[in-house]
View 1 (cartoon, rainbow, N blue to C red):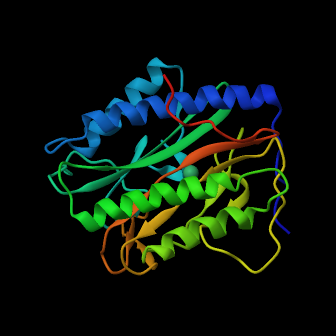
View 2: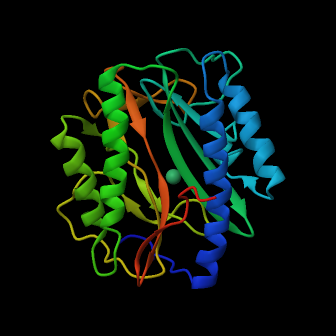
Length: 254
Ligand code: MG
């Protein structure tokens, strides 16, 4: 038995949309500043400053001891990379930036992968397929479907293109806690998974590898890398299930 899924009222969803819009704006701003020569520590500082200006508290800083505000994961790094002034972006890299805030008691959480200048065509395709897989998953985030419909849609799209989904890390419910029930794997499971209903808010986040699906954690205790050291991409949206279908809370809107 999993933990109970906490449903959110329309008012709570409205606040969560505000929280996620802070995240969306920051990711958008960072995307425009990503270029060769920028350090991941600089990205972390920009994210933190901008969040504070908007009234959002960086959610990851200090979470189980995580030392940064922004997760920065380059190339073979999958998720949870630690910002550092020693890590300088260079032409041909890809970087996943994952950011969360707490705002008026609720969390927002989203991630994108960004190319630094020109990158290998295979990696361009990896990014495209991962983003598409996220949206395929979101399309299944409708009343009466099950969590597994989201998982299966993501896995199908990824594997159809010859890539693999990470299994050790999964998406999650989100609300007044950063990580709530249910878990949202990016692969299909045989067991019965929870039925979706309006009021659920889910952070859906495919992590997709060019090579094999296996990953491991580096000695820093955080950085997750692919076992075969091949590139990995990561996209995430926080999505509310409503009577009118999925509402992407973290979609950047002006
Ligand atoms: Mg997340």
